[in-house]
Amino acid sequence: EDQVTQSPEALRLQEGESSSLNCSYTVSGLRGLFWYRQDPGKGPEFLFTLYSAGEEKEKERLKATLTKKESFLHITAPKPEDSATYLCAVQANSGATNKLIFGTGTLLAVQP
Amino acid sequence: NAGVMQNPRHLVRRRGQEARLRCSPMKGHSHVYWYRQLPEEGLKFMVYLQKENIIDESGMPKERFSAEFPKEGPSILRIQQVVRGDSAAYFCASSPSGQGNEKLFFGSGTQLSVL
Image (cartoon, rainbow over all chains, first blue to last red):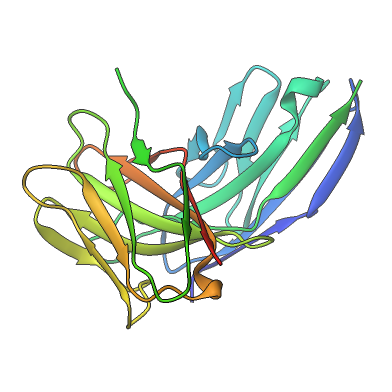
């Protein structure tokens, strides 16, 4: 069964304190790994897609990396506005569907 | 350039009533996905629809839940005879073509509360 596990469940950082979020996955053929950001009361907002092991993508203070078993979302010198829940999801390479299988997310709080 | 539109944003129903949740995909998108998010849980896939067709309903409860995406108009997620356990945030997402690797664009969700 395709599965996504994220850790930690919650993370509190001081402004400027860099850290990483983990996403471990098991999937019957990976079509893509997605990172989304979700603010309270809103829908997930797309951040990155990674397709193959070794791939990296960056956007402002965020950098996503991918191995054959896990992905990391590195946050460099975070600011309070980076506070949100970060969701990881996989798209399996099976069937005629683009559905995403999500982890439960990491709730990030960045304190000034 | 409107994004995915969901309404209502909040819906309150009493046990046994029906809930109808609406989703208009982004302009040019013909594929719609419904997800449910329970407190302390992740987003759970429910159903994937293309215009007038259900492609994948593997996440839909067998009873009381149905979904449609007619040729004209929004996609509808219908929950009959709601129970307290149906209280959750329901999110709709859309994509342009259903091809592999496409990212999904999400709406802001409908928060369903069952009294």
